[in-house]
Image (cartoon, rainbow, N blue to C red; front, side):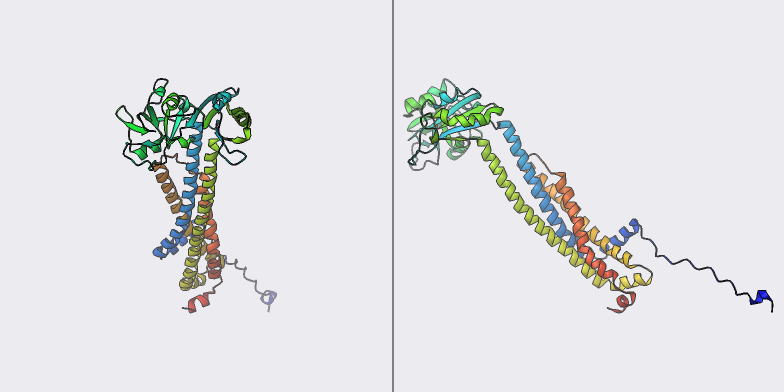
Length: 413
């Protein structure tokens, strides 16, 4: 026996370790789509829950932002430098009165650019005809007014014209927007008359709504001279309106009370009408927070629906999972498959909800003539939230599916 025969045979080269096939993103997408297509109705209902939550959130944020933009536009047109002076209460709790010289004294403040006033005319109820019972006043007040009022408060004439130096001395009146509606008067003209304090006045104009002076909306405005000569007006202003330079508004507000009524500055109320609109905006913001909470709850319910769908999908597809594991699919690939299905389900709901929310917002704000403002963060944030929900809702079902052994999945019904 030769030495070559005694030499051990060479060992065969080691075989390379088997590696599972790699799933590319395109493969993951295909597997996820197939899983949803096999149960379209269930997938649709689960995505619908997500869509409702996202559309609610986008619509709430969009409508609120559009409303805020409309308010900002209104304030920029009307200005925030309007201050009003009105009588407060005395030390005994009675209604105070402004002196007759209040308007003239306020006009002497250096930063004041324009000033005007209205004065309540007592016992001067307004009626469409003389046959209406005295008690049915419709909440309409009569005010003596200056001819500079529209320019000072930013009021606009909807029909007819404003009082001038001539008509202010004659029985002529301008009605507020609400007053004209309550009296059933649609236009101004020489043939349109109302009875003010027992005297027939010709309606020469009708105002548009005045956001910064809402008391004008429910008023009948007559000239200062005719109010004194025909209606017994005492000449004392009820509200003094003043416009100041923007940089000096706060300084003017601090001296208005003492200037309008030097003898009793504590009996004077000074206000900034634009602050009321800002308060309304703050109230709308609080309401928006409430609605966002409702949208968040709807989104949570949608996420629970997705999780429920994925858990049931794992239970119903044991055979498929077992077959894939037998053919070499790893636990990671099974997890990836079910996570992909959950993400696709949530993404479809998120995209549909975002589009629906944008459509609802655009339709509503267009109907009320607001500027369409839909923050990008609301849309992108809503869609990002759906992806987070998709991961959270699909994580447990995916892990549960990956832990099934091939024999367990194929043997159990």
